[in-house]
Image (tube, rainbow, N blue to C red):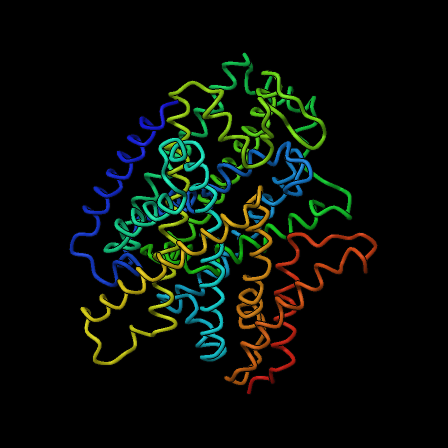
Amino acid sequence: MSSTLLFIFVLGYFLILLGVAWVTSRNSTNDSFFIGNRSSNWLLVAFGMIGTSLSGVTFVSVPGTVGDFGMSGYKAFTYYQVVIGYVFGYAAIAYVLIPLFYRMNLTSIYHYLEQRLGRYAYKTGALFFIISRTVGATARLYLVINVLQIFILNQMGVPFIVTSFVILLMILLYTFEGGVKTIVYTDTLQTSFMLLGLVVCIGYILTQMDLSFGGALQALNERGYTRIFEFDPQQKSFFLKQVIGGAVIALTMTGLDQEMMQKNISVRTMRDSQKNILTFTTVMVIVNFLFLLLGGLLYLYLLDKGAVYDGKQLMMAGRNVIGDDLFPYMAMNLFPQWVGIVFIIALISALFPSADGALTALTSSFCIDILGIRRREGMTEKEQKRTRMMVHLSFTIIFMLCILVFKWINNKSIINVILELAGYTYGPLLGLFFFGILTRRTLRDDLSVPLVSLASPVICYFLSRSAPALLGGYQIGLELLLINGLITFSGLWMLSRPAK
């Protein structure tokens, strides 16, 4: 496939995004950047959030998990256990967190921690969000940039570092002015292209293999690919761990994440925001199933074309294509050119929503929560905007450095990396918020709060590494996030005193 032709499509797609950004960012203010002037359409927000949540990791990694034995920790459709857990987590967001945030009229959700637990808890929560979202967003970015590098830019002689720089520059340009006001619209556009790519690829394989939807499920079932539940408690994919882990991941990575909630609280009313979350949940359940279905079909199609699986590797033309390599390899080498173009556009569409939202939310959180620019007396709108733009540029540079680190690590299953890192970085946020929500106790507003929050991930790291030896082979999986939150919660409880 011509790399030049693909590059032209990528450039054209970016010009469309710039056009949308230009239209939506006219007459924008700091309120437009931070919360979209609280005038976002709930349906657009719900649809755009799908792209943000799924990202390039879902688009590339999830299909690979269906036959990805021993690499991601999942087999067949067992990843869907996590998705089932998401439903419970999103319900808690809709009926517990959203009413709380709207009642307090928050711009940054971490202001809740300040009002409930004190300034140190507030700064600690914001800092953990900044670390969590920076690591997660750059891991997602690395995955997609690496695919573009392998299948387009390497053939054009462009180094990885240049590819990363140009893509980050693109994201910086169309989010620089409008912020949330712009990305509500760009995310909607990008989610549409991503889902179109998913449906086109499924349809193409079904047509080529002469299968109906029911026939495809039957063929996958015969190979054991449709098994959802894992009942072995020793496995990381044990269903109880996955469902609970999925619920906690949804609750923290969406409900306690400024990027995701920034869009939700930009909606006019609380009821519309709740409708947004429930609509988003329904679509997420369906779309994740389709990604797993696509993964199974990709393996069937590849085996039908002569690939050989030896229990560890799936070899095609001398190359192992298990895991994250599966979908990109097939789209660019085995599918016709028009399908490859659709795949690249869909992949880029999966990249941008997770990156632009993260960059905007990190800028917002650092400006509001760490620098406190909205509270400084005498600081004009123009001075706030100048500070905000400098922070935005600084986070772009940090993103660049983190992407280069992931390139150096070069892990073959990024989705597993992201979920494991989330267990360490989002756990203290879970403990802080739910200490405030579930108890009436008070804390001393001092360094003890950040010390407990920092100690918890360290304890979890050693616990996770020693669990198999101490617990007869038991492996800690997604429940690490819950354990981390409980340790933080317990530490805060021991430091607290009853409310007067």
